[in-house]
View 1 (cartoon, helix red, strand yellow):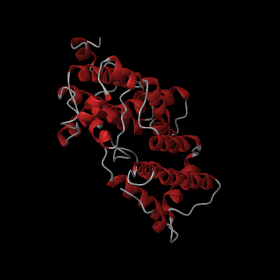
View 2 (view 1 turned 180 degrees about the vertical axis):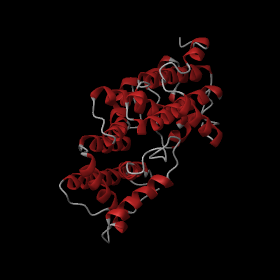
View 3 (view 1 turned 135 degrees about the vertical axis):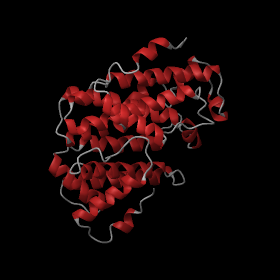
View 4 (view 1 turned 180 degrees about the horizontal axis):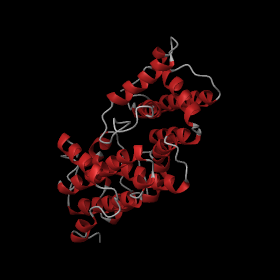
Length: 311
């Protein structure tokens, strides 16, 4: 979805119209993972939708590949300036009208919102990552702020919870990278660490040609193992937050873990198949979310039975 911001700024919007606008952006965009789903309290959803709309539009600016790089950066700079003005009380766009109210009601600091824009600017200028640590650094700005903002909306600001959320959000971002390898290839974006590709003797030419061989499978086994480890490192979070947020976090966690399992089931043939969550999968995720309270041991028996050879 591409938003023509100059058109929407021509007339003032009421607060209700602004939140409705943000909800329409949230509902229109396909996501494997729930965004402000019906399992969240109704009074919290508009605030999450305002943050999502702010992020979605900025992401779209970065993804307008037909637009020259400098123009995309100008759009993101303008969006960042609108964010700064929003904190000064000056708003002229429905997203920022809703965001201003969200910031005021939920006492949201500017840093996580600004970090998201930093990540989108990085998307414009960087399309390769040398090491896994470099990728994690990117996720600190691209993914982790979202989880922190959701926790803040629910009144959680304890550093332990924020760090647990970081693990889950980074894992979700990585899972999205691994399922979208073929899509990102069309944009000339490669998120598999180059260091790992060399380690497993999988070249950039192989990636360009969509080669899925034993080297690629071992390479992806490593990425999936790292990602699953991060999910487990954040698995305690749902049991520590307020009841209204617990189910949503469990659904997100199970959804991400299922994406990893589906990647394994297609034997990492990501250039021919894109793993998605079907209706049946979502029903099963909901049932698991309702059944399991402690996620820290979920699936560990299967992991022990299926050790990966990563040498």
